[in-house]
Amino acid sequence: MNTSRRLVSFLVIISVILILAVPAPANSDAGIAAITIPSADVTMSFVQPGIIAKVLVKEGEKVKAGQLLIQQDTEAAEASLAQKKVDLKRLEWAASRGAATDLEVEHARLDVKIAQIIVDRMCLKSPIAGTIDKIEVEVGEAIDGLADVVRVVKTDLLWIDVPAPLAKGRTLKVGQIAEVKFPGSEKDILQAKIIYVSTVADAASSTLRVRIEVSNKLNRPAGEHVRITFLAPEKQPVRKNIIKAEKPKDTKSN
Image (tube, rainbow, N blue to C red):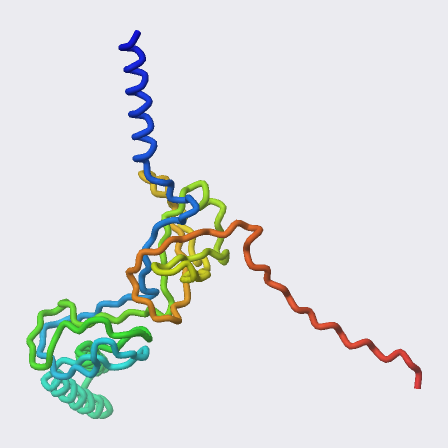
């Protein structure tokens, strides 16, 4: 009898330990754990090997889309381009007098176009407006083609890919609002907007990837651990449409 009681007590203790050891579900009141990422993140490389001639930016510097960042030594490539342009003019002149064919002229034009592309690809321009996060090269350094050269990130808007439980994720829609709890005080809670809900669930974890976007006016670094709470439909902000009343028509007769 005592042995049975001891066995029951032992099983109860084991059950309590197992319950306490199980972590809180991802959709508990604490929110879903996630990590912030840049809303754009571009690592740029040169297509071909070369010598770094100019580094026109510094790490931490704000840049505009289309701004020249880093340039290889283009002297030889520009000389080749100039020669091909001269050759093209000569062929066009010869063709106007019947001494060259149209096909020869078209080939010369193609050579000029290819030479121009080579020169352009030796100049790295930022494809986005953002911040220089890292520069991997120095002036005078010889680099291989496709080696990492410079990284540009956009963090004025942060993205968060949230692994929402499947049952919850199916109810979410683009445009709905979520709350983001940042590390620190309880006041560090911002509202974010759902911008994408994945159409493919993760079978292993039974979650659905939901991407939200949050404004980063405080310039927080990307990569922070945050907690996400999706607001219930009744707690979603109400958007009031303001309708201007039409001016009543004058019905008085003259």
